[in-house]
Each structure stands twice: as C-alpha cells, then as structure tokens.
Image 1 (cartoon, rainbow, N blue to C red):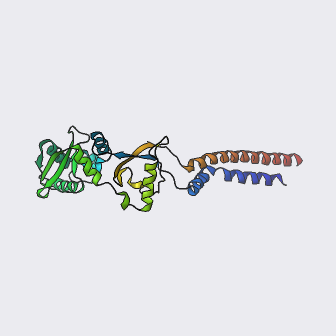
Image 2: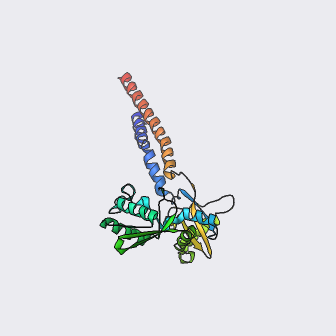
Image 3: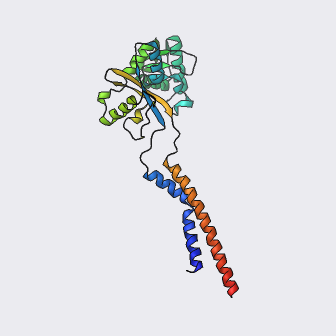
Length: 262
C-alpha cells in the first residue's frame, strides 16, 4: 500500500479520536440509566408525646407551618413581597409586644398572604426565641403573635404530613424503601432522581398510625456516567495524538524517499 495513503488513514483516524472526551462523555450520559439523587434519606419514627422528639421534629419540618421573619426582606425575598422590610419589622414587633398595627398597604397585603400560608411565625436568625401563633386581622392592619408551645407547633406540622394511604403506588414504594432501609448497618436509601415522591423529600409522613420524619442522612458527590466517558475519551484522544504523530512520520519518510529517488 502507498505509504501516503497509510499516512492519510492514520491522520483521519487520529483526528477522529481527538474530540473523544466530548462525544464519549455525551454518549455515556445519553445511554446511562436514570441518575441517583445526591441525597441519602432515612426515616425515623416520631413520638409526639416526648419533648425531645417534638424538638427534633419541629427543627426538621416546622417550616411546613411556620414563617421566619428573615424571609420577608429584600435580601431573601427576591421581589416576592411588596414591602419586605416593613413586613419583617411588623412581624418582629408583634412577636415582641403581642400585636402591632400596620399602615403600609403593601405590608398589609404581604401579611395577609403570609397568614394564609403559615400558622406560626418565628425569628429564626434573630434575637426573638420561640414560635408564635400568627393572626392577621382588619384586612392586614392588625397583626397578633401569641406565644405557641413546642407541642402545638409539632402537632400542627404533623397534621400537614402526607398520609401513606393517600399516595400513589409508586410513591408508597419510595416511602417503603426509605423506611425499610432506615435500620441496620447499611443505613439510608438513595433514590433515583425520577422516583415518585422524591421531589417532596425531606418530609414527614404518616404510615398507618406511625408518624415518620424523613430527613437527609447523607450526601454523595456523584459526577455521573459522563465523567467516566470523559476519562475514557482522554485515553482515546491520546491514541489519536500518537496516530497523528505516526502519520507525520510516515508522510515525511515517504517524502524523503521520493526526494532521494529523484
């Protein structure tokens, strides 16, 4: 075979190998099964009759029924509230003093919406301790905050928890896998990202008469199958460089031979 053709063949194959990290990484992602969540979940039964369980439960899931004053601020609200700073100040004053009147129309609208969504208010990152039952009256112009006990908040949170028997069969399977893998040495369950109910986690859930707190037990840094394809592609690209080098050697050798013969 003409060595120029050999050089051309080596060059073509080598050039095709160079972008291998890109197309092998893409192929690995495209053909891989659904990825797993980066979160590992575990379920723990909750006894609402004990203070320690109440505290852990409210710390984990109390945001289901509780609004924190810091959420109503220009820094955190991202335009969600009309008068975030006035709204936050009104909530904090109500927690300190029991009630407050509000004149700002935007803040009154904000407070009505907050009270419609959440039963309690707290100052999670401020200096006001505890939970307060929130009520907004007179079209938002009067805000009351009454000190709420931990057990009241815990029970209100539990009332909002999904019921196992009301979930779909797929959602029930996900719950079962988490609960079944929440004991023993290999603790925790890492679901697929497209498993039913995964988008609701972490959450409390009732299964029968038992209340479970499903929370994040661990985290996995997973770069996915694309990384493996990319690494394999680097090796292929290295082979491509070798082939291009050989193509150059063969071509130059053939030219020298032709020159010597001429």
